[in-house]
Picture 1 (cartoon, rainbow, N blue to C red):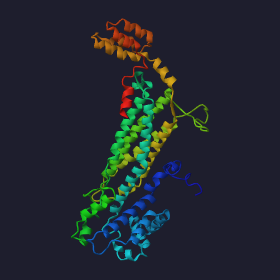
Picture 2 (cartoon, rainbow, N blue to C red):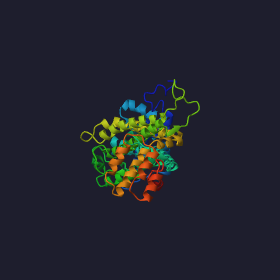
Picture 3 (cartoon, rainbow, N blue to C red):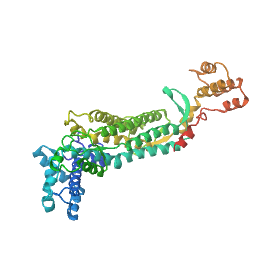
Picture 4 (cartoon, helix red, strand yellow):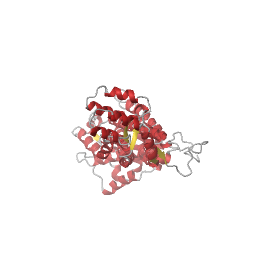
Length: 456
């Protein structure tokens, strides 16, 4: 079609296609086939490098270079040829095996050991390692860097606004003041903890045949230590070896990764909603973009669309990944295919997550805090100083301190003069009176600035 993005069924490949280009090499069908090829070739080389298998020998530099080139220069055209074979075989991994044999048929060295292509393997041996590597590489090269940029930007903003006082709003009502930076650094701390957890999740891989017992391997070479051979192969790919499985690797580590991303996404949804609210209150303004329209009828509008877009996509991501978490660790008996179609949606869930990260960062880049609006809100909230006054009264043993301040301030407009008159009547030392009288809502921020600075 002339406009494929306009006719795409999913907005990930339509409206948002350009923003997700970096994920396509990992999670597209082309990406999956490419990773399968990498595993098949690596296994063939691993067998050839084993001196205890007499029927296959280590490859010459020329053949090794040809194999490297086959993987390194794999193209969409190559993948299309494999899909054509799949139309005949109705089996995607077998189609790759046939294509690999055909492409290497002109190499006499490979021809002599062609039967070692896919030797001892079940399709899931290839697939589970492919999915684990796809996730590992996508996290390292695309997803984690996007998350890190977002966290770093938020941290810098928190430090810039560490001393900027802001009226807190517990239950949506005026509450003890804080600083803008302190509220942002709270989110930074949560995100960094989750990002660290995500980076520590070990993705597992298995390579043990049809039902996980090396049956075929032992039938051909009973004297070899196949668990050790499989372990060195899997670990050589940069994955962690799972020694016990059925036909499928049980996907527990994939579910852990999805859970980790879901929690990180939930933290960001919380941030998006708070920032949306602060924009509504006027604490933050959004820098307008030349030519951009906020409403089709209201010319003045500058909507918080980036935070709304982020929230929506992160919610979609969590819905998809929630199903992955619940489904992937479950398989009937030694194997069923329900995981196969679900795993093809790894990139869909993570793609919506990436959109959420990019949209949130875009919104943060547009924010400017409104000092005057923040100060105005604080100056109309002198009732928040009832807390320090009653606390000092308690310190000096004044009975019913809380109730006295509650009767005076709850639900009533309070002025600076009213509070200072009340303070003047208190039977407390003059130093405490002076300290309380000097307080303003803008200066009553506790250790907010220090806590923000110390976290960095």
